[in-house]
Image (cartoon, rainbow, N blue to C red; front, side):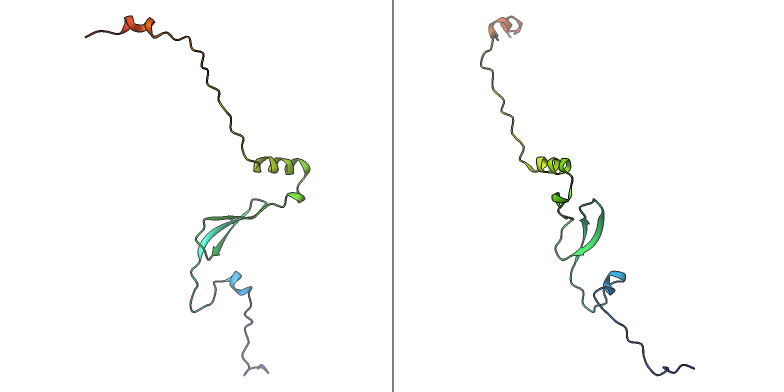
Length: 104
């Protein structure tokens, strides 16, 4: 026989209960499955209120080594466009090839 037979156990609900099981609500807010990419490259599927496929968290470049920091900064710079110069000097003579055209 238990001395606390008539007492009911009180269940503590807090913000962490939803991470273990499903959210216990009568009405559910519309959420979309989204992939969250951490700075170290690991991924987690989360529920997000806006329809997005992927969310990438930023990298703290000051926590990286000097070589890695320079490589990331170099990737973020805009790409330079290569300008092609046209050669205007042309030695093509179309009169040489008139003999190959057939007259009908």
